[in-house]
Length: 205
Image (cartoon, rainbow, N blue to C red; front, side):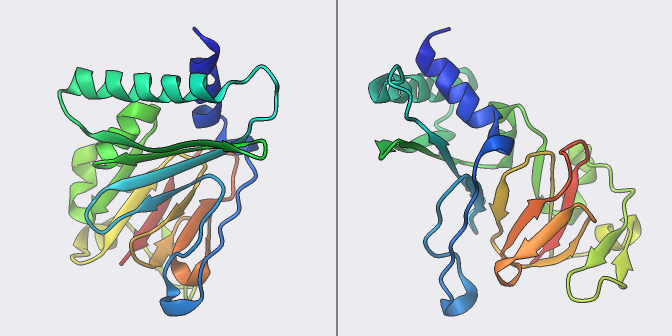
C-alpha cells in the first residue's frame, strides 16, 4: 500500500482523533462556515463529507494524497458502475489537509467507509436492518420519550442511525435522540458522546 493510500485511510478511519470544530452563521439557523471533520446531509439526499487532518510531516505529499483519493473514488465508482462519489476538494494549507467528497446517498457513504449509516424515512429503517428497539428522548423535553412503535408511526420525520463518530449537520432539526447524542446549533448539529460502541439515533425534521 503506498503512502497516499495509508494517509487517506488514516484520515477516513481515525476521526476520533481529529479536532472537530463547527462554526455556524446565526442567520436563519442554517449551517454557515464549517471547518473540521463532519458530514452534511442535504435535502436532495446527497451527503457532503469534509475530512480535516494535520499534514505537517515532511514525507507526506499533497499530490500523492490527491492521487490516492482520486484512485479510491474511481475504483468505487467503477465497481458500482456509477458516478456515486465525487471528489470536491483536496487541499493542503498551513499544515492542514482537507478532503471534500460528495456521496449520492447514504448507501454509498456506508459502503465506501465500511460504516453503518441510514438516513431516511422512518418507515424504511427496518428494511435496512436498523434495530429500532430503542427509547429516544425529546430534545425539548428529555422527559418525553418515544419507542419503536412511535418511531415507525412517524410520517414526515426522518431517522438517522449510524455508528460513525463524526459530527453531522442535519437537513433539518433534531427532535428526538438516543442518550449518547448531543445536539447543538439550534438542533442542526448532532454528535455522539460515547466511545462509539453503540449506534446513535436521531429523529429529525
